[in-house]
Length: 321
Image (cartoon, rainbow, N blue to C red; front, side, top):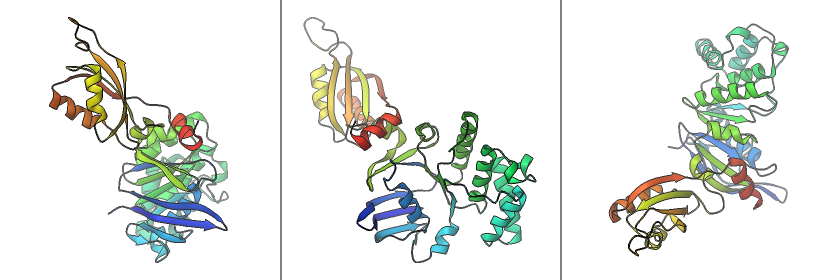
């Protein structure tokens, strides 16, 4: 069972469809980068998942519980760090985490266990008895993460968790998110593309209320306009015959010949042939290419995904440039 599931979800404000027929599911153990331009529908989608909003149509489920039927139960399953990271700065860190545990109605033993877990995970031991208003921005973000994981939720939603941090603090928070992803399902919303590349194993891109990309991080990064771009080098076939075979694969949208190999005794293509294969968007054709090479008796000397930067892919998908 998926921990988060949206099915044909719609949310409208006035005449604007902020979320327009959105469907996706997120399973346990995934670290998902949720990306989109300003006004694309990211925040509205996260508010639907966290039961702050209810969909106009379609459905949103968290651990099998429909949002709207039992919003309190849904909220208990989620840890949320909003972009603003609201903290009671006149409290000590210890007082604040105790207060959060009480707000979440945790029994004393669970509250103590949860605080110990959160402090250990976010390395707050050295500032546990310090006032929050004396902490650096980096430590305040750690306190925000600590309150989000205190109840050891199934799902952790982080909205711009490194906003305003210096480069060293960003690296530390990225490391922490990676470690949290080993025990929690994480949804990370950020404008900092390096963080998504460093921490996420899946990427979802929303634009104008609709999902325009959803897949494994390496496939989306290799995607761009045509889908995954794979470079390969082989022997055992001419460039033209290899291209014709590969173009017939279901996961392949196009093939370009980069090198026709070395001609020997007048026979074209008896040397190494280099090709670029473009996958259907959302598909990684490497497994089909490898299987086909074995069936045809080709020798593969190289087979790898060519990656663009996430910033380039994001700009191309959301602006067409």
